[in-house]
Image 1 (cartoon, rainbow, N blue to C red):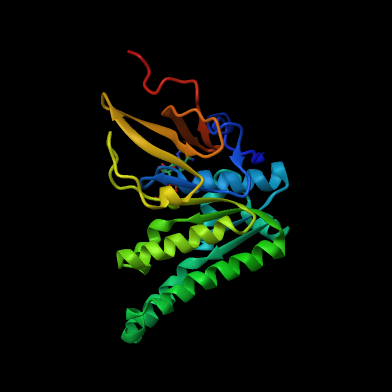
Image 2 (image 1 turned 90 degrees about the horizontal axis):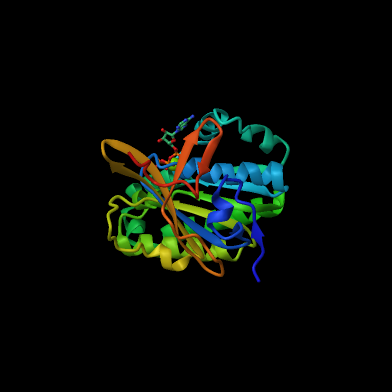
Length: 252
Ligand SMILES: Nc1ncnc2c1ncn2[C@@H]1O[C@H](COP(=O)(O)OP(=O)(O)OP(=O)(O)O)[C@@H](O)[C@H]1O
Ligand SMILES: [Mg+2]
């Protein structure tokens, strides 16, 4: 049976059936401002200081300085964790910008998949080296949505996403990968990446009676008995907390 690891997020262990399955890939889906980055960072930070599991944050959409200052408000000192050799930040934003610039310069290359393919391979190699270097057990990739700019062609993007997720699954780490979902309604089409991963968590903002409520749902978690209910969560200066036993909307 797969071992479970503490998520570090209040209420989430209970929701996912005792923690995240070790060494698997979990997809976190949510709209802008849902709290994807905060949740992933909390998983890493608590992992480092409460579970002695070192972590790596691969960012496709924000710089290291921005990330560090954003996380300070929760009292999560990632800079210190980095100095202690327990954390590493891989800035993959610049890599993709440089690559895009190159493509503009060498139009020929932009038509071949090879040039782009190399950059995903390179990212995985860098990640693998860092995992070994700091003996990381937890990895975040935030966010797949940013790959759209890098791979405007749908098929190329899909290839990149499949490669990334499959590589992560082989690295011997527990990973959270984020992505966006523009439209959320009663029915939606599953994203392709949902079929590739071990688990899927959805974060959304619901509107009812003039108020908004943040709600989270475990859509899938292989090998686990999950609580599939849509339940409320909050974001405050301590980070994210989930309330599995609270009704979504208070009765009036
Ligand atoms: N101290 C705080 N108290 C309450 N809410 C906060 C606090 N800090 C941040 N938030 C909320 O957290 C949200 C941002 O979280 P986060 O950056 O993790 O979202 P995200 O899903 O990663 O968004 P994006 O798609 O833009 O990257 C915002 O909606 C913001 O209102
Ligand atoms: Mg984010």
